[in-house]
Image (cartoon, rainbow, N blue to C red; front, side, top):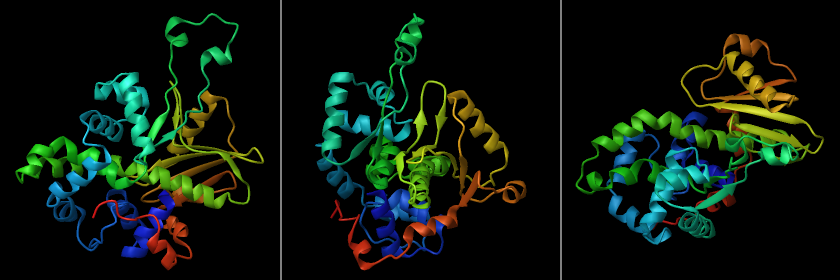
Length: 312
């Protein structure tokens, strides 16, 4: 679904470069409205979203039945690490009402689950007596928003609803300016996984996605049909990525007890000269412009798919 939305957004707007495509898509993807991408993001957020707050709020309230518990959970998932139990706690929910909210939001195609691949210590050491905190550790799945715009709304807009209603946009725009890069990073990570899927299409991926446990988090960990292991790190910053990121990623792999066949780095602004000169079969580097391959052979069908407007 994300790939269809990404292709559809491009087919409708034709941005000048992939950096702009990714940044604008991370906010307006899935909205289904024509926007003027020649305008700065701050200006578009005001004219497209904030000035239309009442209308968009009503449409999104329909999606979530205007339930405060659902809205609190969506906000907690949008701003946090998306782990279910942490989001329940942040939203003031328990396993009962939180679980019911998740079921509704999944059934209505607002959220989808990302299953953890962590193994519980009891499974790894079935015959050992474990420390209480280790034995009581809970493996938590994560939730992913099906449309970037919905996540943007609950990340930036809902905390300032009362101010926006009276036309005060100052704080929401300040928050966006402060957190734009960290917000966009998740969409960039999800798109990076799609790029990996494309380049490994001759060797079927059996399992892919981010990996997380109590001690380690890796942006992308994929295993193919031929049992090759790919690990990736995604950096949506204005700095070039250097060799330190390779070492950090390999340290994480060592903690997990895995030896990757290939390390992949995805960067908004490219890489240091040292990294560029050290590319090999074991190391692949992808900058923002490389994501244009996801838009190969765009057709009118792509214009129709992925963005049937939920907001009219």
